[in-house]
Image (cartoon, rainbow, N blue to C red; front, top):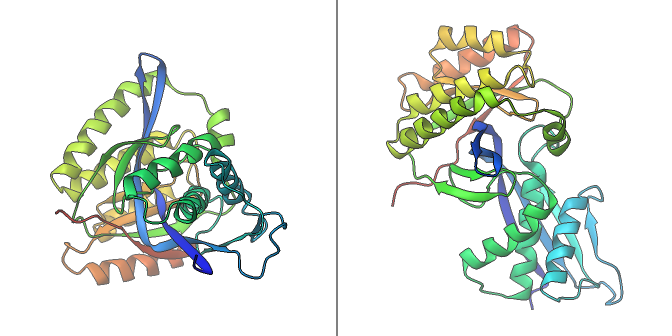
Length: 300
């Protein structure tokens, strides 16, 4: 057995669309992920030099969901956990809307599968990882290397998309923290919005299948606006103005986080200048910005 095993999962910049429909069993929550290239969590397992009787640990010590994921899946698989340490190496900020805890959980769960059953086929490994993730939190579907849609509260995949949108998101963090599960418990569903979200779901699915980045960005903007009464974004008015000034395609937000940003595409002429000038304008308005590259699964 190797001294170290590692598995990694990407982060996301909020969601392109998040909402709910009304189904036979009540409200059914969904989201479309906005995975990004710059954010990644890696979970590493070490046994070398650790006493075989020592309890499983995680570092940093606050990554308790990663620890629980590994421990729970080990119990399911009837595997021992003593004599091991999990190390989380992540550049994903916590409680902002970057899907940090989902990435921690999935990376740790995949780590457990890799040690227990080396060479496990990817669909089987993903199914085992998700069996734990669904018990621990609401979350994104981060196992597809591109945009996907999922039932949020069960992390059940609806569809995987292969696109060439070439989006750049110029994002701002408005500060503070949002705990996803607490937020969703406190915010009631609005039956009047369910039919609107159902229509937006269909429109975004069609836009992504057609590789229509402009339509997808317009739907992201609509989602941000619909959700603003639930978790207002202080920067939204500034972003709307800058969208017009610099020709951004739309606005993307973390629906249960502190993030909001403008969507550009490298398909646009003068993309780099638009992004640079937009960031300068945000800075002049008191917003510190970062840029993120949409992570896409290319068409086969």
